[in-house]
Image (cartoon, rainbow, N blue to C red; front, side, top):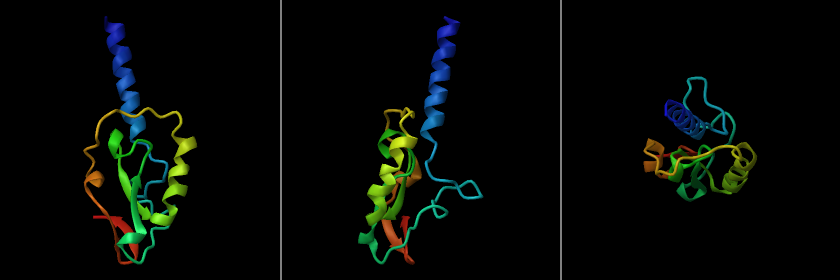
Amino acid sequence: MKFIYNIALLFFVVVFYSCNKSVFMKDSDGSFNGKNNISTQCLNDKDCAAIKADCCGCMKGGKQRAVPREDAKKILDSFKDSCSQIACVQMISKDESCKKMPVCLDGECVLQ
Protein backbone atom coordinates (compact mmCIF):
# COMPACT_ATOMS: atom_id res chain seq x y z
CA MET A 1 0.00 0.00 0.00
CA LYS A 2 2.86 2.37 0.83
CA PHE A 3 4.36 1.71 -2.63
CA ILE A 4 1.12 2.76 -4.37
CA TYR A 5 0.94 5.89 -2.23
CA ASN A 6 4.53 6.82 -3.16
CA ILE A 7 3.88 6.27 -6.87
CA ALA A 8 0.72 8.41 -6.73
CA LEU A 9 2.55 11.16 -4.87
CA LEU A 10 5.39 11.12 -7.39
CA PHE A 11 2.89 11.33 -10.26
CA PHE A 12 1.19 14.41 -8.81
CA VAL A 13 4.51 16.14 -8.11
CA VAL A 14 5.61 15.58 -11.71
CA VAL A 15 2.29 16.80 -13.12
CA PHE A 16 2.22 19.98 -11.03
CA TYR A 17 5.90 20.74 -11.65
CA SER A 18 5.67 20.28 -15.41
CA CYS A 19 2.52 22.35 -15.72
CA ASN A 20 4.33 25.39 -14.35
CA LYS A 21 7.13 25.22 -16.92
CA SER A 22 7.10 28.00 -19.44
CA VAL A 23 8.33 27.78 -22.99
CA PHE A 24 9.57 31.34 -22.63
CA MET A 25 12.49 32.44 -20.48
CA LYS A 26 11.93 34.10 -17.13
CA ASP A 27 13.42 37.48 -16.37
CA SER A 28 16.48 37.74 -14.15
CA ASP A 29 14.27 38.35 -11.10
CA GLY A 30 12.43 35.07 -11.77
CA SER A 31 9.21 36.72 -12.91
CA PHE A 32 7.67 35.98 -16.27
CA ASN A 33 6.71 38.69 -18.69
CA GLY A 34 8.34 37.46 -21.86
CA LYS A 35 10.00 40.79 -22.70
CA ASN A 36 13.33 39.07 -23.24
CA ASN A 37 12.09 36.84 -26.09
CA ILE A 38 9.04 38.26 -27.80
CA SER A 39 7.92 41.66 -28.98
CA THR A 40 4.92 43.03 -27.08
CA GLN A 41 4.52 46.24 -29.09
CA CYS A 42 1.06 47.57 -29.98
CA LEU A 43 -0.87 50.70 -30.94
CA ASN A 44 -4.25 49.95 -29.30
CA ASP A 45 -6.04 47.27 -27.26
CA LYS A 46 -7.27 45.47 -30.39
CA ASP A 47 -3.64 44.75 -31.32
CA CYS A 48 -3.27 42.52 -28.22
CA ALA A 49 -4.42 38.99 -27.45
CA ALA A 50 -4.27 36.79 -24.36
CA ILE A 51 -2.65 33.40 -24.95
CA LYS A 52 -1.33 30.67 -22.69
CA ALA A 53 2.03 31.49 -21.10
CA ASP A 54 2.98 27.89 -20.45
CA CYS A 55 2.11 24.46 -21.78
CA CYS A 56 -1.15 24.23 -19.89
CA GLY A 57 -2.82 27.64 -20.04
CA CYS A 58 -5.58 28.90 -17.77
CA MET A 59 -8.04 26.10 -18.54
CA LYS A 60 -5.58 23.46 -17.34
CA GLY A 61 -3.90 24.97 -14.28
CA GLY A 62 -1.44 27.26 -16.10
CA LYS A 63 -1.05 30.98 -16.88
CA GLN A 64 -1.76 33.44 -19.67
CA ARG A 65 0.12 36.40 -21.14
CA ALA A 66 -0.53 39.31 -23.49
CA VAL A 67 1.07 39.34 -26.94
CA PRO A 68 0.52 41.18 -30.21
CA ARG A 69 -2.46 39.56 -31.95
CA GLU A 70 -0.46 39.09 -35.16
CA ASP A 71 2.14 36.97 -33.32
CA ALA A 72 -0.29 34.84 -31.28
CA LYS A 73 -0.51 31.89 -33.70
CA LYS A 74 3.27 31.75 -34.20
CA ILE A 75 3.82 31.73 -30.44
CA LEU A 76 1.19 29.06 -29.81
CA ASP A 77 2.70 26.91 -32.57
CA SER A 78 6.02 27.06 -30.71
CA PHE A 79 4.39 25.14 -27.85
CA LYS A 80 3.76 22.03 -29.95
CA ASP A 81 7.26 20.58 -29.69
CA SER A 82 8.10 21.95 -26.25
CA CYS A 83 4.90 20.73 -24.63
CA SER A 84 4.45 17.36 -26.28
CA GLN A 85 5.64 15.53 -23.14
CA ILE A 86 3.89 17.75 -20.58
CA ALA A 87 0.83 16.52 -18.67
CA CYS A 88 -1.56 19.22 -17.45
CA VAL A 89 -4.03 19.03 -14.59
CA GLN A 90 -7.69 19.24 -15.54
CA MET A 91 -8.61 22.30 -13.51
CA ILE A 92 -9.14 25.99 -14.09
CA SER A 93 -6.10 27.95 -12.95
CA LYS A 94 -6.17 30.29 -9.97
CA ASP A 95 -3.19 32.27 -11.31
CA GLU A 96 -3.74 36.05 -11.24
CA SER A 97 -2.90 36.34 -14.95
CA CYS A 98 -6.03 34.34 -15.80
CA LYS A 99 -8.25 37.05 -14.30
CA LYS A 100 -6.82 39.82 -16.48
CA MET A 101 -7.50 41.13 -19.98
CA PRO A 102 -4.93 42.06 -22.64
CA VAL A 103 -4.54 45.81 -23.18
CA CYS A 104 -2.10 48.09 -24.94
CA LEU A 105 -0.37 50.21 -22.31
CA ASP A 106 2.36 52.63 -23.33
CA GLY A 107 2.85 50.77 -26.61
CA GLU A 108 3.15 47.30 -25.07
CA CYS A 109 0.65 44.44 -24.72
CA VAL A 110 0.14 43.70 -21.04
CA LEU A 111 -2.43 41.98 -18.87
CA GLN A 112 -4.48 44.30 -16.73
